Length: 155
Image (tube, rainbow, N blue to C red; front, side, top):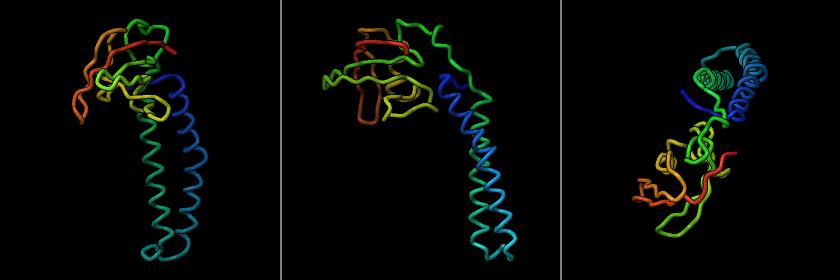
């Protein structure tokens, strides 16, 4: 089961709808067009259309599976005093005194450029359940990071 924010659930549903209603019919049309051009064994256009069809079907099935097993998280029932899914966490790396701020999200929402880290990442997993002032130890490829939680907010 995957827990998603309402926003991400809606984004995935919109992408799925777009693929089913707009992209896939175009792919099918292109496939029929290239198929009508004769010998398929030497038809590069046909092979490319089949490859695109396969990728599109694969993406549709992947998104359907996510939505089938997804649960939308109600932020009102989440604890506000400890790090949990959808928390905005500000923390200090005790080795460098660098302060960072990230939102803890599901793996399907992760986006480092937008300041979102997965709860399954080493840092996200280490922060989960901690309170302000506590130290989390994240085991990353470069070693162990000691992170002090400075603030927790829910958006």
